Amino acid sequence: MTSPQKTALFLTGGGARAAYQVGVLQAVFSLLSETGWPAEKNPFDIVCGTSAGAINATAFACRADNFEESVTHLLKVWRGLEVEQVYRADSFGVIRSGARWLSLFSFGWLLRKWKANPPNSLLDNSPLVSLLHRMLDLPRLDAALESGALHALSVSASSYTAGRHMTFYQSARDIPSWSRTQRQATQQQIGVDHLLASSAIPLIFPAMPLYCNGQCEYFGDGSMREVAPISPAIHLGASKVLVIGAGSMGGPLRDMKEFSGYPSLAQVAGHAMSSIFLDSLSVDIERLSRINATLSLLTPEQRSKTELRPVEMLAITPSQPLELIASRHVGSLPLAIRTLLSAIGATERRGAALASYLLFESSYTRALIELGQIDTFSRREEVLKFFGVAEADKTAGQTVAQVSSVF
Image 1 (tube, rainbow, N blue to C red):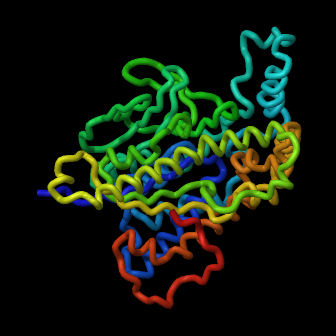
Image 2 (image 1 turned 135 degrees about the horizontal axis):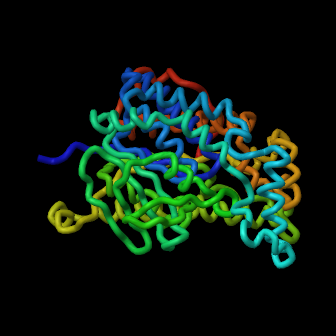
C-alpha cells in the first residue's frame, strides 16, 4: 500500500523580508476559499523554514489545525510590527551593542577594557524573545502533530561550533534522521531557542547555544551553509513543495550607473546577505528541476531502481527588488538605528539591500504583504493546479498588474 502524497510548505530566510511570505499565504488561502476549500483545512502536511522563515513556519504550524486562523494570526503580527519588537532601537541599547561593536571592529586593539566582555553582535535582539512567545502556541503545535493535522515541522540553523548545517525537526511519528556532507538532521522538540538560533543573522544578531547529541554548540542563521534548502521537506516525505522566497531571483539586472563607484560597507554587506539568503535556493530549485526532467525520461522499471523520485514544486518569489521598496521606507526606522545604519551607508539607495533585512516597520512590511498577494493572484492557475483544485468561477478573484518570476 502506497503512502498518501504529502504537500510541504518551505519558507526561506530574509529578516524583515519574510513579511512577503505572509502575503503569499493570505492569497493562497483566498484562492482556495473561492473553490470551496474548507477554511479550517490546512493544505500543508509538512512545514519547513529557515531564519525568519523558521519563525513564520513555526507560528503557522502552531495553528495547523485551522488554516484561516494561522494566516490571520501571521497577518496581524506582521502588519503591526515595529523594530522595537525585534531588536533594541533606543539610543542606550544601540550604544551598548551597535556602537560598541563597530568601535571594537575598528579599534579593538585600543579597547582592551572590552576584552573580557566584548559585544556579541551589531544589534541586541532580546525583544524578539517576547514577540516569539506571543506568536507561538507550542502546546497547540504538539496537539496538531499528535492529531495528524500536521505531519512534521522543521527549522534549520548553522553551527559555528561544529561548522555544519543542522535541521531540527519535530513529529509525532518516528522519522529517521539523515546525514549528508556538512549537514545533519536531528529530531527534537522545537522551541523559542531554535528560532532565535535559526534567525540569528550573522554579525547582526548574536549566536544561540543549542544542545546536539549531548553537546552544547553555538548556532547562527539557518541560511548559512544551506546547500540544499528544500532537502528537509523531501526527507520528511513531501512529494509536492510550495517554496515562498524572500528575494528576487533572476529578472533584469540593476542600473549599473546607479551603483557605480566604490561599494559602501552596507552595499558589500547587502551583497553578502543576498548570497546567504538567495543563491543556494536558486541552485536547489534548478537541481530539483533537472532531477524531475531526468526522471521523466526513465521507464517505470528504471525508476524503480533509483532512490530518486519526482517532486512537484511551485516557487513564488518577489516580482520587484525588495531593496528598492526598502529604500522608500528607510526613513521610518527609529533615529538611533537610522544613525547607526547611515554610518555604513545602509540608508543610501545602493546600500538599501542591508536595510531591507532589518526594516521591521509596518509601512515596509505591509508593502511586502501586498506584493506577496499581488504576485500570488497573478499566478492563480498555477496555484490552483498545484493544490489539485478547480476554479469555482473563472471570473472570480482579483485583477493584478504585476507578474512574478516564473521558474
